[in-house]
Image (tube, rainbow, N blue to C red; front, top):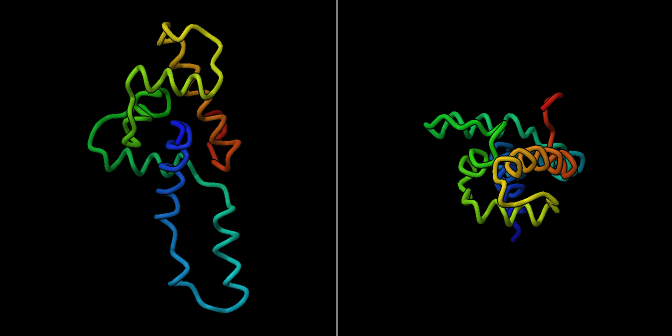
Length: 124
């Protein structure tokens, strides 16, 4: 799985875990369609990550740092992993300039999350 795929899976998986499952829902035909509709609903990325950060026990600046975001999600935050993510997301800059690449990565990840069903706060 790609690194971005792991990011999406980690965030969206936590969001699904926080929602009631179909087994606890009523069994009428109208409610049977509700879980499918709920899974298509946008995931509140900010809420999921804020909850994870509260449980992490460490100060992680996941809104501005790709390294902290990856750490929060339990993913590899090494330079090599970030270079791989940059390649996946088609970063055209110098991957040896890690500061510039990291700034680009966090912005690009936020944009891609929004494009893939993530709901982000305005100005985020």
